[in-house]
Image 1: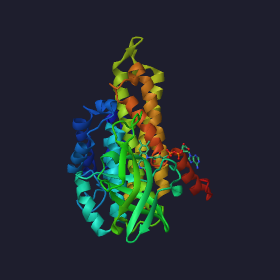
Image 2: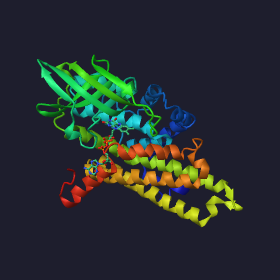
Image 3: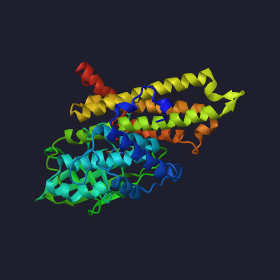
Length: 387
Ligand code: FAD
């Protein structure tokens, strides 16, 4: 972040190691992402496999996990990496979040030793790509109603159903699929080349265009008994994975907002109207000041949650506070920045509208704003207002 934007001097509160990790990821984003991301976004095509291997080389995939080739970094270091990645594009942070916090975490936390040995080392290097199938065409915010079924046939499992809006699905080697069994919800590590599994790319997205999203159809997919994640019992297992990924979003959204504000500060300082830079108008300064205040509040919140996570004290509803606030405010910042850029604000030559469009998805996935309000509301009142 430019020194001017670090209004609260947060930088010195990071450790040397945390700053180093942040700077390495920032450099990667500057070198590898910024020069190309506008084209990836416009074309709706991103070299995800190639990027995954580069991210893997830096230890960014499953970076907060331990063993199996994972970096074992702190939660704050992982958050800082998410912040830098999303300053590049939310789609790239999504790639890393889904790989590390959803697919790898599910196997790491709930898988058998054989499943961990089989998948985690190659996922950590980016050789294998994972996805996480919870959402269905008819069941999004309410995954407890999922229709995908897993039934026993001898020792085997047979999966039938479909998953929708699954990040990385069309390029994945393995999908963690959540399905209803006679004993409740269970998770399965499904190799994507299993007969009966098909993945189709979802096209015409107006958001997260530098991210691959797909639909998975499961047509009588026969799996051996050992495809089931043995420790995953009930819906709380996928929900715990979502908490992991939401934590990364708390940081990532701030990165997108920061990139918008940095771009806008530079633009407003150099663009002259009525004989003075836009940055010199009081109305512009009011916008800039309000946005900078929200940005540092978001950063403080992310850092606080990160410190709680590193102390093993972070609770899911606290992550909801962070996801709700930081994504909502990041989207507001992106939209406000766009106004300051005038017509250039709608151009892909600047990152602002791309970030704003991306943040529309980020607002919806990993629990919509309304779902996080309900989580917080339940914590406050003791009353569930979900159904
Ligand atoms: P719905 O649940 O139909 O909700 C529609 C609206 O109704 C929302 O505003 C919602 O807040 C509101 N609403 C719903 N219930 C209530 C209620 N009780 N009270 C008040 N309001 C309510 N899913 C995966 O499993 N894996 C992925 O990798 C993945 N990647 C994604 C990538 C992208 C680009 C997108 C856009 C989505 C992705 N998703 C993924 C799906 C995402 O998690 C869902 O879209 C999200 O959970 C919301 O579900 P829905 O779209 O079905 O909306």
